[in-house]
Length: 249
Image 1 (cartoon, rainbow, N blue to C red):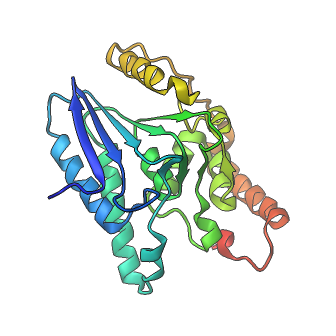
Image 2 (image 1 turned 90 degrees about the vertical axis):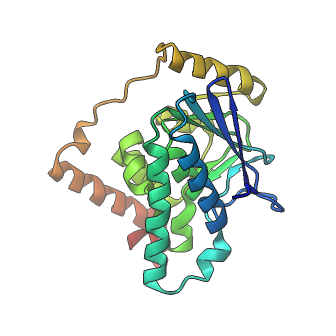
């Protein structure tokens, strides 16, 4: 299979999958791109020389903009939609279950399915440039993150922070993403190459020093989770027009 949209490079144990969608200004997770991604994951997962996987983008100001909206608009049968969701979920599970760590290098817009792909990685690094925008905007289209984001995001940043992003579709920058634990490190674009290599070296030398995730007592018990969901719904009534039903579905 010819790789039109994702380039694979392996150098000294570091594999890089670089998204660069052919004839497009942005990277989108079209069916063709996802199939190519799945094939490449199958190819590298048995390569015992690989120690770390980097997922990057060759597009200016874009990591991955999300799913292909044109393809979504063409789907009007619930069984077709279900099959697409299940197939993408399987690809992201393959990424999550690789036998070596994976790092999403977010240098630009990371939206929707692009963020859900990054959530399936072991780690996430981001640049502090203004072009780095992170969001799950699906709710603004009347749908929800269907590629595992609703499960992975709460595990990474906690239920309260996750509900805020999922239900409002709000966009955050790298600094906010780091503060809530969505990205593991952030730095200026000019330091990208050096800081990424520094992060890789720390992984390989087992000297990676990350903040410990806080124990969120409020999110642990079923009855307190019910309080959180109620509070989230109450907040929505103040932020969202009552005729917009997307967040309440």
